[in-house]
Length: 247
Image (cartoon, rainbow, N blue to C red; front, top):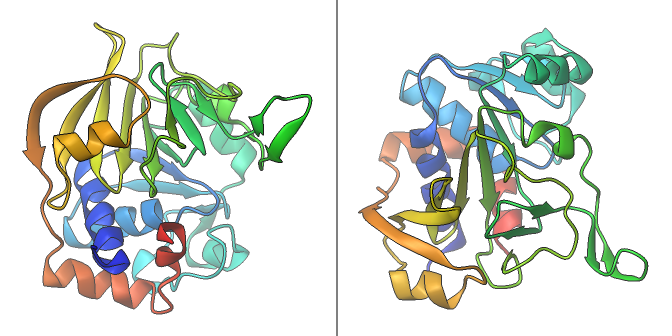
């Protein structure tokens, strides 16, 4: 059994490595992993990222943050320039935001995601938080990065129970990063392609825990976090709130 802290930090660094110099990114609610990934990418990797957050902070001084119970805590705005969320959505429509993160409860083989209900919409077994503006954002954003910390057939399904949002009719770039691996959606074949594995996972592990069909690409191995990266993550998240998503 891999320690939750090791999995979390490894996943944070993997996402940080996916971010590109000069990108403008938006980070939403309950997004400890993406926020820490952005911090690693900017502070340690030296990537020039323009960051917008659901806490309405633009380019917060990430060195100063200490994670709180919500990534929407307004205190985050005090470390940057206030930029209201509705204006960030306008930037999405104009093609001026490059990357957004979403942690859907379900995602399927067609890039459909579910943040609405488990079971039927009329009589759901579980009613979820809702999609906010995801139906609007997912097909428009240049690079959509879904993240899931509990890779299983319950979350990576053959067909979502309800389509909250989808990128299948778009032409954008879509990724799915989990605690086992990273997928890229290949529009030429309309399938997810397995691109990278974490050291503790195998192709068979991914197959056993994935409800949709995928293609095995030229699979690389993700790298473990350096001591410098781990130190930064621990400094920004001294209460280890990031681990909540992994239990």
